[in-house]
Amino acid sequence: MVIDVHCHIGFSAKRADPNIQRFSFEQNGAAGHAGFDSYFSPRLIARPAWFFVRRWLGVDPRLKPGDALDAAIESIYEKHWSQMPSVDRLVLLAFDEYHDDDGCVIGPAGRFQKRGSDIYSSNSFVAAYCRTNPNRYLFGASLHPYRVYEGRSAPDLLVELAASSPRPSLIKWLPIHQNIRADDPRTIAFLRRAAELKITILVHYGGEMSLSRQHMEFEHPGPMLGVLRKLRTESAMPTVIVAHLATPSFPWQSADGFNMLAEALTGEFREAPLYADISALAAFGRTSWLPHLAERADLQRKVVWGTDFPIPVMFMPYWRHLDRTTRRRIAAIPSWVEQDFQLKKAFNLQPEVFTRAAEILRVS
Image (cartoon, rainbow, N blue to C red):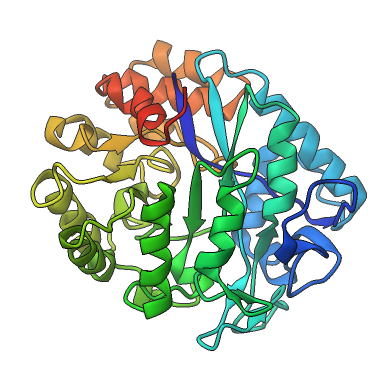
């Protein structure tokens, strides 16, 4: 079974639906923007990344956040997700809001606001969306480890998530945007509970271009590896997937994070439940890493396939690696998810790279 472990879903201004099954801590949608199940912040919409993604997706630039824009976005999702014959499942990712060090939530960030949330997609909404087609979608939850609701801490809220149907396949974190310190006691407590519940953590380290980089001190995977090392000695380590192999956004940036992670995956954590996904390795800025991975058989045994949709696939950087016929064939595929699969497959990665996620996420 081929599973994309890293597929985003979000809308510009989607109202909270009272008719779907809702988690107790999301009865009215976003804590920082009540009444909404998904939103894009003014700061995000002003970012160059949103301008280019909107053009690549073919979204009418005249549409403002609201129902018309969200209808257009949903039709684009269906186009890409219904034409992927090589892909069996997509893990659709919820995305929790920014929380400060005191656990206080900050909602959508204004255009020049220093701290806040760029995107939000509630667990209730994403779970309901996945129920519409369980043969295509898997539920990827998101729960900030600093979150507290009516006296219940995030590990307690995770228990509620774990008891839901569909059960979350993983929990998504983006520390440099959401403000998540690996060695914070609340983060460690959450990881322990995830291990008990056998829920995977998908955590982003390395470069980031789509969302605001609010806490660059959390870019490096080193502190998380230290926490996992300790938890492993206590038999309390959850399964963890590090997004994008902790690669930098551009070739001129430091690759120390990738190097440390690669060494851990092929050495100390070789037999531990630590993995990395290869999402966004075919995206602008990261394309040099795919040929590098193709030469690392030792590293391929510890990676899983993902796309980072709706980030588009780049073809021109591979003119030295793939013949023109192959590039044109892949470029003609209407689905970016299928494009990503076919491009990475053309680099002759081990077949297990594309099927390993089913075992990790316990999908039958």
